[in-house]
Length: 178
Image 1 (cartoon, helix red, strand yellow):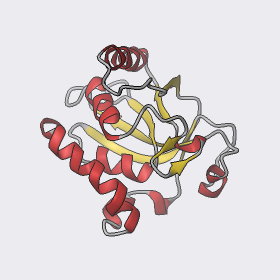
Image 2 (cartoon, one colour):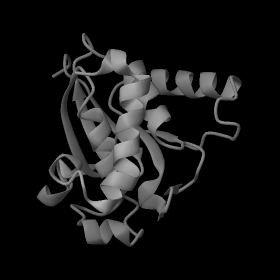
Image 3 (cartoon, one colour):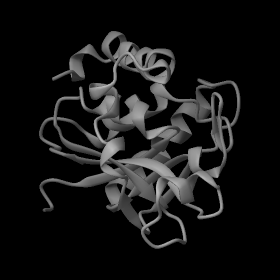
Image 4 (cartoon, rainbow, N blue to C red):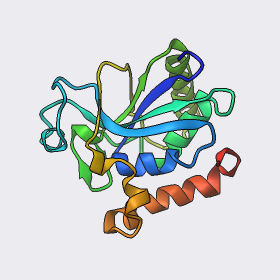
């Protein structure tokens, strides 16, 4: 499995992040889930309480011959706000924190290097609060959360929040589209 690494990202609601990465070339699998919390096999309802320590995330399995870790992380920083602690838009709580959960040393180094570059360049105008930690735990989200945007593109939240992120991906990262 070394030729198909896994990277787990928390960028707010997993419906939005999943919708973005499903369109990226070289991403072989995208799954919504929960990570880096204390609870064993939490439910969505458990995670929503904010007491599990879990983050809403997407697990990416990707082919580095088609897409680099840096490309994946550049997309990540473009489609969410990494400067808001425990919040993305109207979604508030530790379960919506910005996080990069790496499974390899290369992913860790790439994340830290990119954060340093973005900070030095003043891209966001505020400090980046994205946590960069080893993947400690991961549990898939319930089936009804998987492929949510794809199955419900006209649902209100999808139209208001996920669709603009997908549109931004298409405009900004056309070279990475499937």
